[in-house]
Image 1: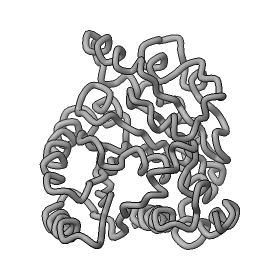
Image 2: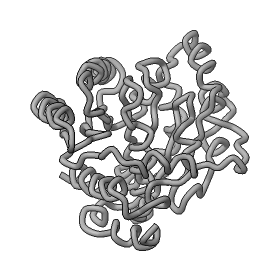
Image 3: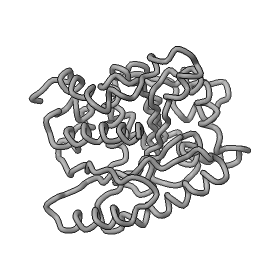
Length: 293
């Protein structure tokens, strides 16, 4: 690693990252509520770099001084494994939060997982959780109800939710609780097919359950500038995606991004000088500029 995490943090506090108010800058609960943004990162297609996007964007925002909560709603719990080492005790997970009325968000949190970053861990128990929730009245509101207190006290500037690669109950819960959806799109041939299905689900949830839900935008991932296919898919997505912004920053194919999770490190901790880290730095600034507009 050629530069320190401190240097990355300092560079991230420039321009757009400075302009989004933090929760601590607010003076009243009513004001603080305004700045708690809940972003679901979703795509029912697997292997699109969704967890990479969730983790590294969350770490990027936290490094810029924003208070961030990462919620892992995926039964694979890859986002949790990304940042939480095997020696860290995990007592309760998101499965307990969704299924048990007596469990609060505070009971689940792994606090100070990184500076300014807390994690609500996922686990394999979320698979069984889906089956139990299927028989529950108003099952789609479980997460939203648990996050109500969080939104009211303004503890976080951002809540970023990693969702499973499906359009099942867990993803619907995330979309019902969220203000915005960020969609990773792999630059492969069938990329837009999964996105069309997701957008239809978002429209239904917006119409029937969560009228405040908006598409924040799409991020092109696993992009290989050397291949004609990546460039063709990029053009197709930019021309065909009309439901929100297609961010100009693309996340490249990068071996360092692939290696980082095995060390339980974000890309900024693992190699802050690599192409992947630089891309996520630019993406964070671009997203925050979009939120300002």
